[in-house]
Structures are given as C-alpha cells and as structure tokens.
Amino acid sequence: MKIAFFDVYNPVPINSGGDWYRFYLLSELGKGNDVCEYYALDVEGKEGYLPPETNFKMQYLASKLPFIRQSKFLSIMRPEYLLTRPSSGIRTPDAVFFSVFYYHIARRIANRSHIPKILIMHNVEWQYLKTNNSPLFMPMRLYENHVIRNADAVVTISLSDYEYVKGLIDEEKIFYIPPQVDTDLFNPHGSRHEFGGDKFNLLFYGSLDRDQNHEALRFIVQELVPTISNEDLDAKVRMNIFGSGTPPERFNLRENNHINYMGPVEKPGDYVRAADAVIVPLKNQGGMKIRILEALACGRPVIASSQSIQGLPAALQEYVLTADSVREYIDTVRMLIEGSISPAINADAVLQSLKGRSVDDLITHLRGGTIPELPWS
Image (cartoon, rainbow, N blue to C red; front, side, top):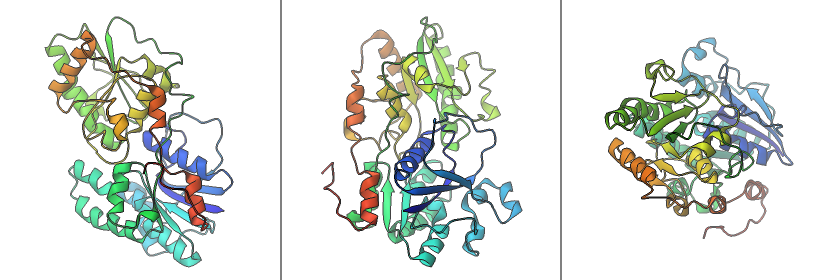
C-alpha cells in the first residue's frame, strides 16, 4: 500500500514527544508499505536523536507562494492548496494520513483518487488553543469537529481524546493507538549522567523552541526558581533543564545562576535516569505527555500539573504526583527530599498499561478486514 502522510514537522531528528509519536506511527506504517511523510515546517538547525535507520521517506512540502515562509501560521496551514491542486511531486497514494491542518490537501487527493483519508490527532487542537488563550480556539473547534466527521478513520493518541471523538462519529472508525516508549533509551537500568549528589536534582526537558513548553519555562524561571531561593532551598535543590531548539531569549537560561541549562543532549535517557524528580508543568490537557511516560519508564518520580496527566491511562495517573501551583511544587519537593513520600514506580507496568489498537489493526480496517475486540473493553 502506498501511503501519503501530511504533518507539520519532519520527525527526524527526534526532539519532542510529538516527534516520537509521529516517528512511531510512520515506522509502523512503513512495515510492508511504501510511506512518504510530507512536512510543512523545515526547522533550521534542528537537533535531536537520530534513529539508526528509517523505513519511510520524508519530503518537504514546498510552498507555491514565497511570502508564506514569513508567517509560521501560514507556513503550517499552506492555504494556497485550498485553491490549487497538490504538487505533482506528491505521488498518488492508496491512502492519505493527515493532521487537522492538512484536511484541505487530504480531501483533494482522496476525492480525486477515491481513497480513504485518515485523521491523525496528536491532541484535540482547539482545546490546546483554548488553554493558551488563543482567540482561534472557537473557529478551530468548529473546523476540527467538521474534519473529524468527514474523515474515514481517526487515530487518537489518548483515551480521553478517543472519548471526545466518540461523541462525534461511530466508534468503529476510531483507533486509539497509544505511543510506545523506546525502552532502549528510556529504562531504569542504563547509565546515568552525573549531576552531582550534593543536591536534589529536579529536571525539566523538551523541545524548548515549541510554544507549548514556553509557559512551563516561564513558570520555572519566574516562579519556581525564585521560590526555591526565597525559601533557602538553593543548598538542597538544583534545577536542571535540557532540550533541543533555542529557548526564547527572555528566559535567559544560560545566564541564570540558579539553573543548570545543558542545551541539547545526545542520550536523554541518561539524564532522565539521573534526576531525582522530573517536572512537567504543562497546561495543555489534550493528547498524552510522552515525557511523563519516558520518566516513569526510567523509574523516576514525576511531578506534573493535573491538566497534563488527563490523557494518561488511569493506571499511570496513580504514579504521578500532581501540583498546580508553585506552593504545591515546593511542598512536593520537600516531601520527596524528606522521604515522607516515595513513589514506588513499576516501569514494566507503565509499558503494559499502554494497550490500544495497533497500526496493523488500522491497515486491516482500511483493507476491509476484521479486527479484534477493543483491548481495553
């Protein structure tokens, strides 16, 4: 089967949870199929993990309008394809996979070739926009619901997103395909970076040039770190940050003497295993926060906002310590230091809880075959 896959980013090199999920889906689709991902944003100087091999092709979705590159929003949306046919460089596929931003492209290809179109949901996009106080959340809600209703199948990353979609279309068209953790990188038993054993090491990591991480950086720089200093915890707590991409200059991570900023790292699992706790102060409730899965797979305690754990299976939510204010973060860190709380994390149970449909189930469905009963029902 020839598959065209339209999304915002090229997943290689991998430097975010979204990249990991995109890479996982493409790799699974690439087993026995001819797959090409067409991506809209070409991130200059992107760094991250380079898989030893890939079984799918990647091609930049060239813009027909030179001024498009001046706007990130227009670069993502590619509005010129509303009026023109997709480029002749796009091969005629047997199925087209797409994220919500590329429905206009997928629809044209699918209608022309009479093939199925499959929506890939990294999260519920309008909920993400609403969380970030974007005025675009309402038109996106109307548009995203329209796209869901008109897709031939929908893939969700989390059960909470699955339940949302189930309110709009028949359940037989929805495929909850959870992310899978790369246990070669993220496990409890590998080598560890040496942060220093003199302090309790907090860790935040991610793609630091992505908008969804900027609120977390603001919280760390403007609230958490000053409170650590004000409460004389500097001698006990070290705030460590790593990640690919260039963080906004306003956070001054390199100049902040209270933050150990490391930039991009080659082996992220070594740093996660070395942390005494990983913090995930994200506000977006959609999707599934893959860095929480990675930290739990390494056996490390996680302190996260209540919004950020909503996409996790219920069994995994029990492992996460929740905090929604700087006071709650500080109190939780104190309890971890004192040993009054000590989460017992079963890394194997983390992986076992990620049960859902497989990409093979989806391909079987597209070919008209019978798929097994829901694995979580």
